[in-house]
Length: 116
Image (tube, rainbow, N blue to C red):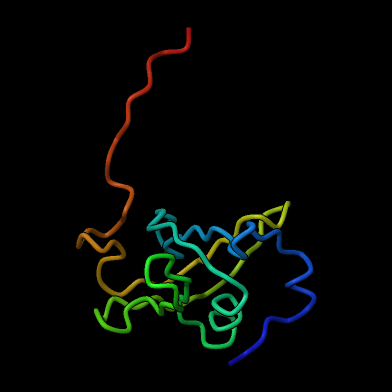
């Protein structure tokens, strides 16, 4: 297993469960595709392999996006936010990103009342 570079690890602010949220964005269109969680092993695997890799909270194991479905993510870029508590993967997505079969997990629209 690849280990995370200590310089990257020291910048991360993980939850008490050892996780960090990952926002996944289409590198070409800029569309937000999904949100998932990663631990240091998942992040290290992503950086080494350029495969979108996450921590499955339900299965309690690493999850490489598309390994069984074929809907893979080639990671072009990984960014940390200014606080180190959120990660951004900019990806080339093959097939739908959402487990429901849609291109993005963010398809529901919520209308907010005018604040005025």
